[in-house]
Image (cartoon, rainbow over all chains, first blue to last red; front, side):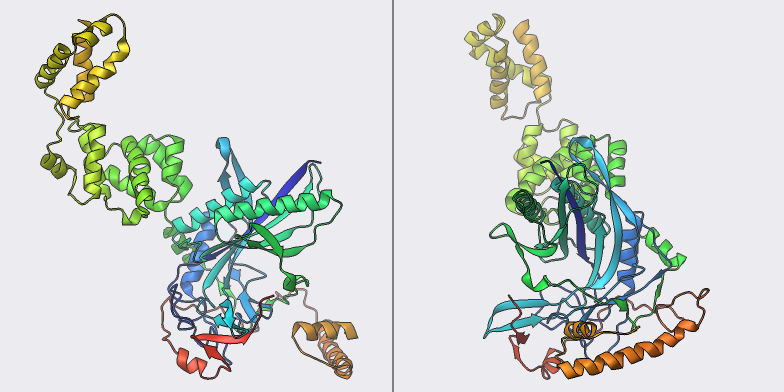
Length: 477
Length: 95
């Protein structure tokens, strides 16, 4: 039977504030256990939550970016359940009137097609602490530093029909929150977490099948693998006469499988109710306007602008704008005088490759955009060839100064003086009479041989265009 | 509206309260009585009343995003039953 896959995703993005959503404790990652858990985060009796303004503003930016409905009022609710890393016995979340309502996001698929994925809602809530199950004499250790870290939970409609679409959507949300500067996007540290709901139904059938929810996915690669595993599991199960049970399953990356979480088998009954400690939040037009003013250029806008302003291909523009640091680096390189097409290539291929090899991020690049721009200017004005430029690039990378000083110090300036080139060519022709004869007899492939000889004689400093022109003239004549 | 025995059993379980049979019976009666009392409000006409999420007709005040809390781990952990390596220890929760 032909099965149709139906996927919806819930993304938890930790907001990049300084302090927690309801307390003044720091949310910096990696602190000593419980040194950033104050009495509000610990749920001491008598404490009261006070909402962080920046968390609200960040949520609004996201709402604007996905063209969502944003109400004038938003309400916080208590979601009740017991777990040791949730000291209050409830999580402050939102149920009715979330801060961000219905919106949508367009994803790009293979072959240049696009698809609009519905966003059901996005709401603010607090993160829980962490349970450490290493052996503490049969006990579990609890670190509550993360408790109270602001989260934006972004819930999609079950609009995705393949694993590829699900991964594309997750990546696009990731790109968006990082561009907006509302989340650092670090998946290893848990700043960006994805839960996936997957079900199958016979192709053409309207009602949805029973879904399972996959948790514990902390990379896009694992998202793809977890969904693949779960899809196979459900198809095998149904085709062998079984039934999918609605449950939460944990993805185990080491074994590459999903496992039922038995403790959650019991239907969750969270008994949401408005939190009496928090008044309704009013989103006035001034606040919304301020959020709108604070919006950066979004990836899709940037990509369109790169295509029109810099005359780049859709592919190059798409790749360059994949991450904001890369797009910014590219623009700074162009600003430093580089030709945009050349800059695009060098940023993605030469620089990208070198960074990759060195295991560095773009913001730690040893070559600055102005240095790269300076180098590319020298290719454009024929001071050096593209080949020599790679040498110069390496020297800049190794801290030997900027392009002009490297070219000067190493004497790499291209020989464009046609008289000088001509003399060298005459010598090469005189030294290789056999090859000249063969060339003239029609073996034109030998042109490469002559160019090589000239380049060798000039240590690569002759302008390739000039060499070709003069060589052809002399050989044919 | 009244609750029956199984409702109270379920509520008690969700609240992690261990009640014996006689307590369940007693709470079934008490809670039903409370609900009955609240039910009296049903006679008020609320057709034109907007539901409120909070009894105070006010908006939430927001806090500036600043770190104002210092580390008080030592004091906080002084009242915890069991602590090790800066962690609060609780009965094992892993399956």
